[in-house]
Amino acid sequence: MFKASVGRLGLQRVSLRLFSHAPAIKAEQNPQNSLEYLSKFYSPEMLQSLKITESLVDPASYLELKKGGKAEISKVAPDPEETYLKTDPKWDEPILYPNQAPGRTPYAPIPREARPDTSDLKLRFHVEQKKARKSARETFDDRYNRVALLTGFNVDYIKKLRVTNVLIKRVSCQTSKGKIPNFYAMTIVGDRNGMVGMGEGKSRQGVRYALEKGFLKAVKNLQPVARYEDRTIIGEIDYKYHAVKLSLKSAPAGFGLRINPVLFEVCEAAGIKDLRGKITKSRNRMNTVKGFFEALTKERPIEELAAGRGKKIVDLRKVYYSA
Image (cartoon, rainbow, N blue to C red; front, side, top):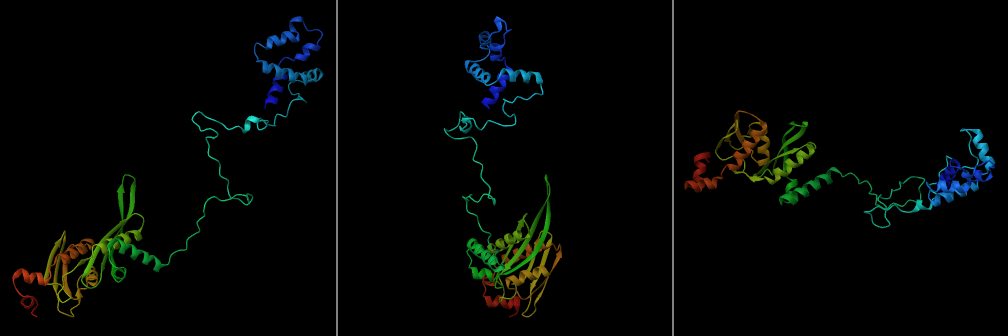
């Protein structure tokens, strides 16, 4: 770059050798006067470069170049398409800035890509292999272990629970960003022996995540249910939950479950085998399950009823069940 710029400046400026070889030059235009004139505008180093450049240019070649006009190309000047930037020794010097550590550049090194033509490239990071997809059994085992760790129940006990998803629906939440879909699931779990739990799960990621949340909450909400002879409820239940009215009665052995299908699933999980009754007014599934779950968990056992009335359990059975 330095040589190219000097060569072009020398050809564009006044030729010192032309002044020395031209016989008709006036006294005020001799080379010495020209140097003094140029020294007003250029530094001594630039004048020295002009002298070196003029020593390499023949006056006759310069005159021929001038006769050729603007389209004439110099045979001495370097190729204009060739760059001399990288030949400068300062090219290899690092760029230093005021707030920069010594010997460091402000830019991070550009990483090389792994291509077939870069066989010498060594990977400095560990490439993780694609994990094999878990089977359904392994997935459920992980699920049970996670629930057992959170709830404290035994893994075998959780595996034997009866799980029923009584309600799964997709809702749309209206927000300032628009309608965002959401998924809702209600799950009933029970051991068929007097323990029942109800849980709700919501997720925007999908139905599977909502079911996972509902199952976890249902296991955490497991509560005992008071039963008569481990098969039916004690007495009658008249319970109102919001707009749902429940009217349930105990039934003799072998009567079966003659109730609403949603309540049937709750009784199957709780271990209730004989029951009759009906639902009046609203039959909303969500409120029906919640109301029946509250009614079962609030019912007191027959031993507590007998103690509260000051009677024996046998006498209480004769009155209510004609046993």
